[in-house]
Image 1 (cartoon, helix red, strand yellow):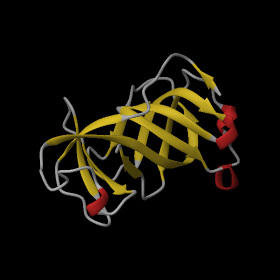
Image 2 (tube, one colour):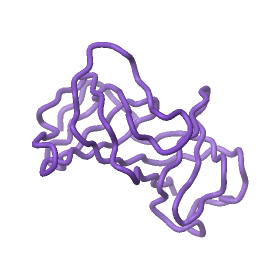
Image 3 (cartoon, helix red, strand yellow):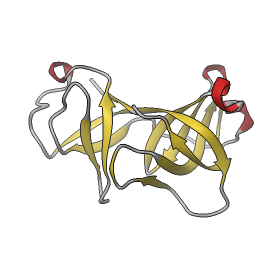
Length: 146
């Protein structure tokens, strides 16, 4: 595994809406972002109290990238600002070549799987510090921390 510097994998959010089977709406501290992710567990298995809005919640974000492009400028962002992430840009923090995934700093840390069969790209094609822009497949997951 190649990495630039120690990087946190766990993202910190504000629970905006109680989770359902299909989605959980999370706010990103200090921003206007309200990201809608697919929960990895049933609502009953969320850390308590999952029904209480506006509380802090931590977990891992996992997505699948479509074709990735190196960018020269633009910073880190998620589009749209409210809803399911579709277009993202961020910096590679860690390369996990064995699992063909990248830990990216995209407003929040996200593990991004590179869909080699679809894109012809591999995680090892990229280095820590690369600024990448790409579309995410639908269904970016949120795995709550126990």
